[in-house]
Image (cartoon, rainbow, N blue to C red; front, side):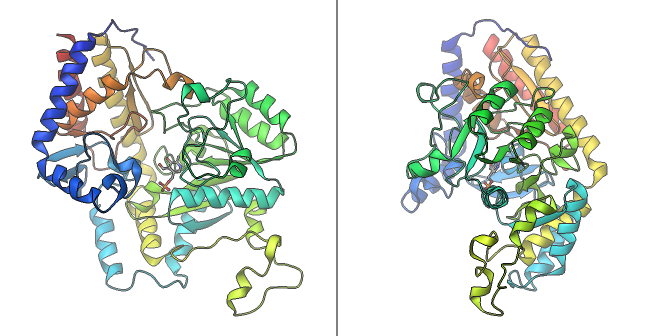
Length: 476
Ligand SMILES: Cc1ncc(COP(=O)(O)O)c(C=O)c1O
């Protein structure tokens, strides 16, 4: 990949473009501003998830179809955010929308199992080459449950996660996501830095942090905690600090080290599963973990999560205690105490999410769509890279499968510590410049664009052309 060293940017110009575009954004979205003001009276930060807020205020959305999304002021965007990558199937794919309408008219929640749950489990087993799967409602639940299964399986408490990875918002993994430089400690033994107030110190102590793409340092860390690590959880591609792929051989080494240390290897495929390839990152990179976590894209836009893997590991959910469970009483599920792993949830396997998963995976994200998604993504990356080269901007374009971004830093990012050098001001100017011209990117440099089955070459070319306008003005 060509890396533009870039010439020195005119910082005043970057700031001026950024300020002008934020002013234009305000002028185009007054209704969103009013809605956000009202929302602030009812919800902290005026949003349902703190990820949704950004300065000066988020646009509120009203409609989405295919690759397009409309805000409350009626502005239309080509959506390249696609709900943080949920929508590889596009907004309201007609086949899914039709099926869901029939489901909504016939009950959306029974808390009794449905046949679609079997169909979806079978499809996930096939795609991801796993033995058993269980459902949840989000990626957070999937990683939380997978970690408990790993702990139950190994009888160990500690886990290893990588600096810069995000695995959802439960206490075990809400650490060292983007730690401040002054707190992150040496690269050989990164500190575990909580990403939230309110996490008990006892939880922090069980989460060991390792640098991504540093197999020798990982090995030393595992040696230091020999016999204590229940699981190593990894995003196969670090997709929460832009796009940071594994270096060649890193995932293979990770697999070997997990096996050697008796730790369960968990691939968090919440962003990669059913997006990178038919069989997710596992297929794309050819490395098989013990457990995978899925969410986002597998539901086509309906809340869902799943985790699964080897029968031996997943088996801890059903290991029956010696004296057997009670029958037909609420107690029965938990009567096993510590001899089985509890996996529970009122909405797990709901008819709505099971149908959404079946339709999305078997009728929309079928094996034949992936070559096209990859071609489109390569075209977008090549187009953006050509612009960066032409205008000698400091940065590079990168994608892994249908997900990519421009990393506004001249040096290639191989882990979180390189990512800290990203030019946030330049990213922000680009974000608002593109948004004001109908190209919507995720509202943060840590996320990336995701292409869907609904995107076209013409939309990708429009994205590149708008980015070229930005670059031209920056360099004029
Ligand atoms: C890699 C990864 N894992 C887990 C999660 C958590 O998923 P959810 O937001 O559905 O809880 C996310 C969310 O962005 C994610 O990117």
